[in-house]
Image (cartoon, rainbow, N blue to C red):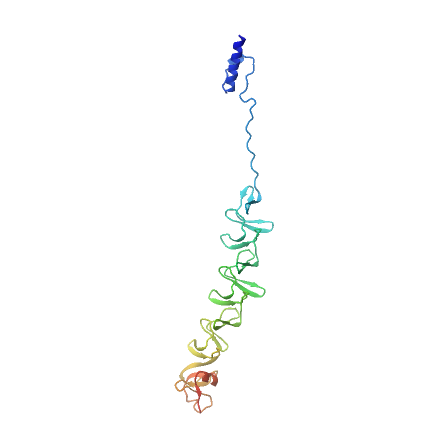
Length: 290
């Protein structure tokens, strides 16, 4: 009898370990405790959550910025400086474009502003906002500088709008002066703009800005200029008078010029009027004998 009881208890225990439900009526017949299927087992524990990233984080040779675990992009201000985070979150260094303008960042990522910057053999100016100046004038140290469309500082000739300007090798705009460029002379007005179709004393600047020599038209009149550009006379289509500033009459057919006071002066038609006898002789005329 005891042998049968022990066998039954063993069977019930095995069923219990297999997770099977033992009827209460059967269990009540046995005074021995039935082992629990989880007795002695250890429950699995969840893996610890990774720490929430916050602030600067370095990955490889790049820096990223997190805020409450979220990767930031775009502009951020930290420690009194501005930084730009690229679309992939990487901190910008050197030149970077934010979709509106170019900016420059030092090796620590801090935005540079309000200063000149030499880069790749050219000079650039970074505005107080940090944006690279482009197609823009900048006044520094009593001089004017021009930053071209690509941001490079102008030297030599540069155009802004409809006017041409000339800049020294250091980038300073020149004004109120004559300059020689190539084989021509030009005059830069007080504003710095190259003079065109303009008289400067006895000199004339043509439509292309070059100083006139030889024959040149100004308005409806043709003028003769010496080799150094000084006004020497004008074309006078067959009248008997010359202006007071060019009183010497020149007869183009005979290549003779007449001075005021000579007997033939008043009856001579002047195809050309000269400032002086020397100007007439330089043009190939000879003096009349009376």
